[in-house]
Image 1 (cartoon, rainbow, N blue to C red):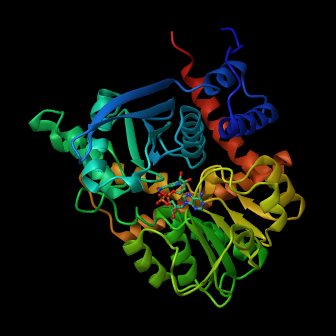
Image 2: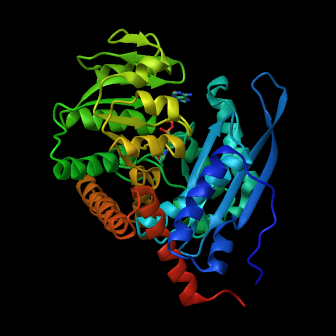
Length: 426
Ligand code: NAD
């Protein structure tokens, strides 16, 4: 096999993910053939599908599904609805899913999907038709033992219910219920798991608890800021607040809020459920983005989009711990600055892996027709994510490298071992 690959240079986020991959691959002298295979997604699917709008007109939407790797198990990864979704972004996110699933020891591969759409501009009926047409367009590229989507930015349990229903209606009556696990992140009514809604936040809390014990810095009384107040941001903030920490800043796509005495999060969540944004909330002061990132705090949790913490933001951050709820929120230059200052960065592939871990539990429950209680889900999640953290830390010490590179190393070593044992067909 030639170990050369011929392709044009990728942009921004994808280039960053690829660079981090190469760095870890170099450190462990990853086999050339495995390096080449993992440097590209296995399958790249682009679909264009028409959808009837409420006013009777039709619009063509573009959607993507990138299946990065499935040596460890079925492809797994969320579906994003956002106007900036691009093939390169989905490729980067799909690769991150491969590293994440491998890092935390799941029998799953990596994938991601997306539709270029601003969901806030569409009615519920339009979003339902977009989702059903997207699921239909992907057709047999998705499957309970082949590729299993989940929610991501701009999608939720409702999106998954439509997706599942569309898929289940495309298979034979007799086997329909065997396909419930074709997506995860469903509501309990539709076959979801206890604890999936808060899973990313719960995993983040588990990690911060370990960090807190080790560093001797208590969570109770710690101040934190969170960027993004959606599925990941709001749950993380609420769980940290329950553990005694104080939320001094929140931001979303419309603006930022600050309150040094603590933002009342439960009330904020109720407000967001009605207004769709934190903007205009009375329990805190509206501040600009620069002020938000400069707020005096101990933990910073980016939980929105990629490339949010650049060098300028990093120079302002006062936090001693950055926990990447979002995928790819910190640029490499910003991360270098933070590490030089002694700030700990818990990288995305570890920090937000609670989502895919509990998705795996949901998939397992669906396959076995089981329902686990919340205590069991939480305990299994904590065991798995803490083990991955300890493993990565041990590798970071062994290779004298940062935690992110160590996470990639753990992930790549497992993938390499699988290729070494199985060989490459034929
Ligand atoms: P979401 O759609 O539920 O919430 C996104 C939040 O980010 C919203 O509050 C939105 O207003 C805010 N936001 C959007 N653009 C912003 C901007 N420019 N500045 C500030 N805030 C902005 O999405 P989510 O599911 O919480 O996902 C957030 C991040 O977490 C994404 O990077 C996603 O890939 C990652 N993630 C999600 C899951 C999951 O299970 N949902 C799992 C792992 C990782």
